[in-house]
Image 1 (cartoon, rainbow, N blue to C red):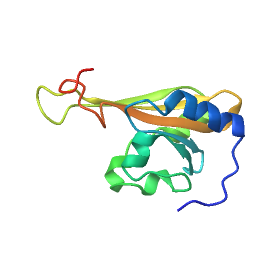
Image 2 (image 1 turned 45 degrees about the vertical axis):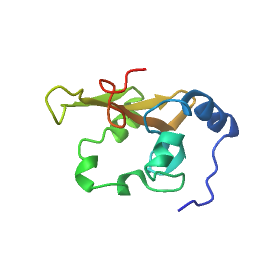
Image 3 (image 1 turned 120 degrees about the horizontal axis):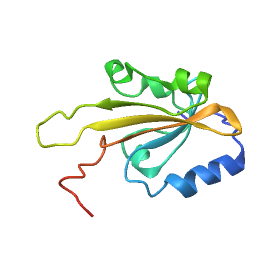
Image 4 (image 1 turned 90 degrees about the horizontal axis):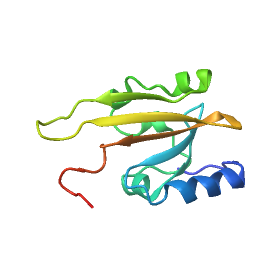
Length: 121
C-alpha cells in the first residue's frame, strides 16, 4: 500500500513524538486523503501510510467527513457521534489543521478505539 511519500522529516518526527503513545488511532493526512503517517493504534487496525483514508472501512463511516472544511478554513473541526449503547461514551472525531503545512491535517477520534469507562487507567 505504501507509495513514495515525501513529507517534511521534522513533521513526521513531531507526529510520532506527539501521537505514538496516544491510545486512539491518529493519522497525518493530506488534502487528497493520502495517509502520510499513522500511530501504532491506527496501524493495529490496518491503517498505513500510503493508503487513501476514505477507502478504509465502510463508506458510511466517512459520511460527515470534515477534512476539506478543515483544509479550506484552516481551523479545527469535529463531530460528535452518540454512543451505540446506553452507559457507554460516544465518540468525538477531530480534524486538526497543522500550522505551516496548509495541505495537511491530523485526523483522530476519542472514544472510537477504547472504552474509557471499562478500562480506566
